Length: 146
Image 1 (tube, one colour):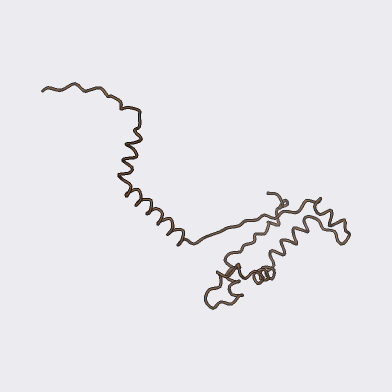
Image 2: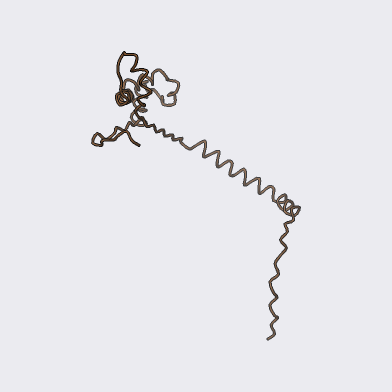
């Protein structure tokens, strides 16, 4: 039984031969192009077929008193920041205000009109499924803080 002594590990050179690297890449150019095209086709297919979902969230807060001072100084009527916020909230919660906006901007809502739906039916589909208004908890004392 003769065994040869194990050769000590010799590290390879730390240099990278760029010419050899580019030659190896050039030899595999069709594989690289095929992989790139496959990924691009998959990405385009997903972008084309995926249903877009958008979510918008807004938080209304009362206007600072100094911004209402000019309005209040006219003497026409006095408006506190809380009253201004309540008026804006009431307008947003108003069904007729949303319906009027829908009627005034029909071009924005064209994709909702499918088949033989009337304008009001398209609005009902939009209003019921896509519009949520959260009211503050009346039991909390500080609803206006973040």
